[in-house]
Image 1 (cartoon, rainbow, N blue to C red):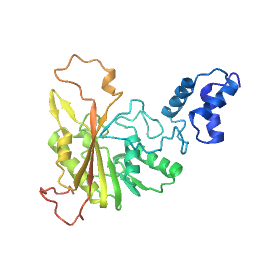
Image 2: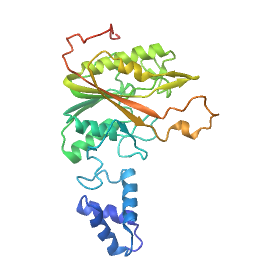
Image 3: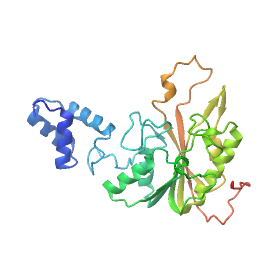
Image 4: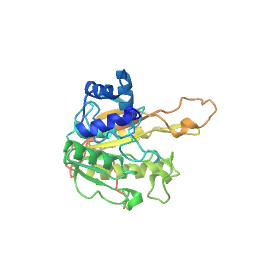
Length: 291
């Protein structure tokens, strides 16, 4: 095995022996590559995890399906885990935040009505396969025929995850049902609120709605989309998580110095359903669903 890369040796060892800690892996590599330092083992393992090559691990030192029990209201994932979704899909996010929320809330049923490239679907599939969670999942998207602006979610869930377009930063398609196609912000807001209400109505009592959203700057003007989400008149606000953004498409473009600082964060706003949909929330404004 003299010509075999350390990374290949590690993957073969893991496949044959299951999840292992650094010491066991180090001993195995030293059998073939005497003198290899431990930090090299850690580096090659980290690369394999980031590339999604170790997504098959169960419990162990590099278990990507383990809950981050030390997660706080600020999260950052500089190196994307490619085990879920399609990284090249514009607006696609890393699945670790969703994974940690599913585990924290002990979710039994989850829906994503704007699943895009399928990150949420893949996260749930991995949790079910490697952690035996048995989470029931439903996902829909405008590209596959589900229009959240006019259709109800098919059933009730104890967790709904929605990652809508940030207005028209990225245009995903055409037509009046595509939020990213709205020229006017007020129309975007109207559609977004209708979508969030449908998500909320699909929650079981005690269930949670998690909305991942970012703000937009247009011609110097700042549109705080999160402000409208926070004013959503349903449920009980439980968390505002700040998610730092990395590797944005705009990072690869040259711009003159901006008058104001660039936006490099987004928000995950979590609401809890604390009453039945038939009751009127305190301070409810008239929010008719679009038909």
